[in-house]
Length: 422
Image (cartoon, rainbow, N blue to C red):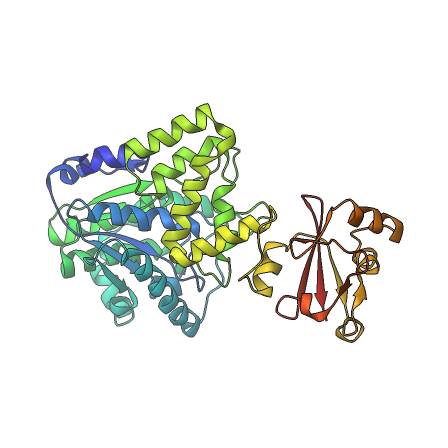
């Protein structure tokens, strides 16, 4: 088994370390934490790297602490942001905190029982303004704060930075101090854009407690083609909440990873051992058409977030695109699978008596004319719900509508139409 640093380096997890962190991680043990902003009701795939990295730490004797920013979320982190974030209400933040807590618990609990999830509102909300200025603000000069990249970047932009967001790094520094006092936490991890916030916490612990603390920052991920990681081709985020991104869409995101990125993602996001990832890398070089590495990545990640049942439904949904059975899939799942496929509508009233299949193909746009529809059926190239149409006299009836809502038409192997019953 590798030591922690060798493991993290091989997987490409380390972007930078603060002074002394390497020696401490090799020889010491303490809790380690990362923070998660509750700016929405769900985490997205971009949050998975710090979550998974904390779990990796747990395998080497470090207790993971997942800090949800119920307090700092009321302020907003300026790091990496070009303009001020809109402030959310306390009610929204509290609701988001509970939702994110459930997501983190669902993931971490599958790998370790020895972890902590905490909301920093617990110590930030009772903190008085005068107390904050005396006990935290007194230890930082404005010059020090102006040197931080998150502040410098905003000062040069129109609108600048508000005093509220200017103080954010001090609140995060106070988080680190509280975690040190409460749990003996001496290590914080985060994205490379968090360097300034992390080092501020290290400085506060040094000045107030006379002790050393450490930071490790992770790379901010982009794809090999330069796109921001965690976005679909349409530019939407890939969420962990199945109501926002279905298991099928989640699976598709990973299986459509570019060849140049798939091995890197297997190292960063999965717990597969080195020898197995090397074997998948070899398979990618010798038989890229098999896409074994892509499939394994999609399976590991979908199982991690949506469980075995979610994975199996995602795999089944994927097979539907290649003519697999629709049995067991709901109308909503089918609409999700075929969301980018051209669609037509038919009224429930018109549909009640049944519609001749030839007319139905023309009405849906799958065939340009009745003559072409007949030719396609005779040639065995028409499918209703992925079952071949054998009879020219067949009528399409309400019994064909899955969930009473959807009929899937296919011509040949790839040309689909969706008909929605309204």
